Image (cartoon, rainbow over all chains, first blue to last red; front, side):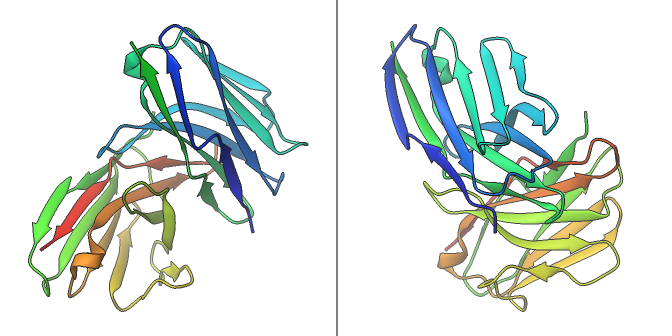
Length: 112
Length: 116
């Protein structure tokens, strides 16, 4: 059974800082991994999707890496802004199970 | 990219009534759709896997008679919460599986259910 853990559970940083969110998973036989953003009371916004054959994906100030062998992914946010404040979720998709498993999320607060 | 919609986006109902939530894949066919539930300040938990033309597979602890799932076509799955109670108040999110070379799940925007 796939288990996904996100550390830290909450993070508060001043505006402008670079930061890293962590996601680890127990079953390395994944097909892909997605990072999502969720604002309070809202649905999921897909940020980055990394296929199992890829090492990283970049979009603007976001960079996600994947190390399948060690069961880890990181989401790097550069020059954080107050608008980045949200909960960030990672989801691991296993083809053999045919479904995604979510971590509990990291709640990020960027202070002006 | 692949788009998944949900309707309604939010619903308020009285205790004891039934509520139906629709999930549609707008620009692709999905043989498999998934229903997740998210309680406040918690992550998404898979409720059931819905395969077109067959019965849904429910995760442990999810009552199949309470959460009725119908996947009648390749673009539509419905979740009916029967005899809803306040403890069923939650955020319900569906996803649709796009198979093939770029096999992945695409998620809907979610439906917020409040049972009074």
